Image (cartoon, rainbow, N blue to C red; front, side, top):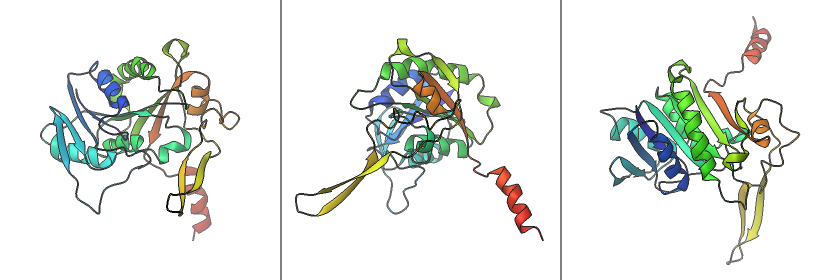
Length: 258
């Protein structure tokens, strides 16, 4: 299998190195097309108002001056156009992508773009509770296990579904197992820091709280990604690109009938 790797932390991110190690347990045909610089929070954005540039870092490894979405597009339509990948892996992100994070995440966006282009795609993220460093050994160990289990089922996953994997902030020996989950919901803990720059002008900085994954207890339901991670399990969540809410469709048909 030819595998394409991307991320939103940038071409030099430690999580990308971990993902490459994982991918090479599945295939010796691994390509990397990742952003030149960090693109966290870029979601599924495209670069439309300036040109994109590709830098060849080494054999089968390229940096792009754009978003994760740009990277996957350029990989499929330019860099790998004569021999397309059979799988897109995005990550491993330094920080979890669970609950509402899926709408902001550039990591998940890389997998979304792969899915839209008809390629089975998986995003991987490592929950990191500051000030603790990311436990990359956990992502490497369980990433290999999860992907090898998924590899045989790739053809059974619907074409509009991507898989979102998150690893808890624990060492390998403390992980209890792997759970298939639904997307959770929690009260937003993002905050805005206000300050004054050296020239006396006010500024505002948007960012997550220090313990946003620890503080979600009580807002998550059993069976969600939040519940699994808080209880020491790796979460595996299928995400559908069809955002239509079927019950509301039926209700609105009644409202607008006739």
